[in-house]
Length: 204
Length: 177
Image (cartoon, rainbow over all chains, first blue to last red; front, side):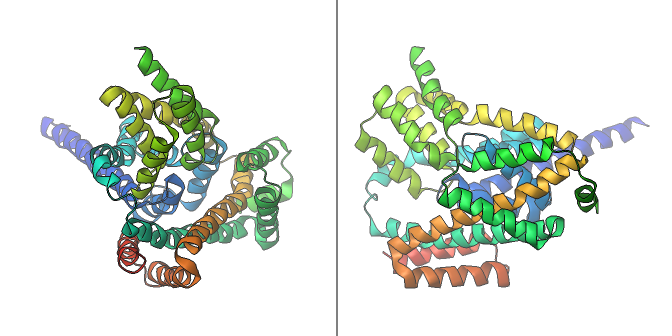
């Protein structure tokens, strides 16, 4: 390869990486700045960016990320951002995604705190908080519905709905912590000997 | 120096014992910040939390960043945010790297399939909590209007969430204030 060939190859690599890092930054910046109600409210927005807009992951991988994220302690949004950034763009991507998630809101918070104090009891802020909640609810509900529909493909309606009902009872009626149930499912799936029937379903 | 160590501990402990995302770890942060290190009073903490909730983005890092900055300047903010984020993120990367390595094994495939309904229910429960917030704050009629409007805009007409969110905030500022 000639010198010029090398040079343009290097330039191309640098350019591709730069473009990718820009996309990573934009996607997590957008999800962070549009997410009202803390990290969990940003899950559907991150899903939209990562699965729909940039297609870095499919639904299955995204739900694995959510599952592992929920079995581990700590804030969920930064775990998602850090891991997805790392998976897509290495350690640079991880740092980049974290910066895009954390920095803008922290800087706004520190810079505007005295200004915000005067708005604390404003009915406008309260109205905005109330009006954004149903929108976040609809986004979370649609994501839940999509996950349930996609698990029908792997498990069939019976098992998918059965597991859903068991989870609902465990979370809401028994008050079992989600991390315990998800942890139990993970251990069950890994430890139990693979029966031939389920293997075929998983592979088909 | 000891101050930065305290900042680190105050946010490291809620980060590794708090399950259920940032909002669930807030009471643990409050215990460290108000009870143990006495950097703030309960009412000051409540005020900072209320302001944090009025801004977008994850709440745990906003609280860590602000309180860290308040106690120890820019370096304090960096220490607090790192203590909140890094421990669980490192565990996450290690676990998912393992998972990715074995992603073609039938056991991992089965695990992925079996987990998904539980994750779906977890998201549905979260959705319900947001509906309940709005029902308590804005009443049934407004909540139903907003649910119907955002459903049609997002799902039927495929409007980008950014516009729907900005629209909802404007609606809330004008009609629900």
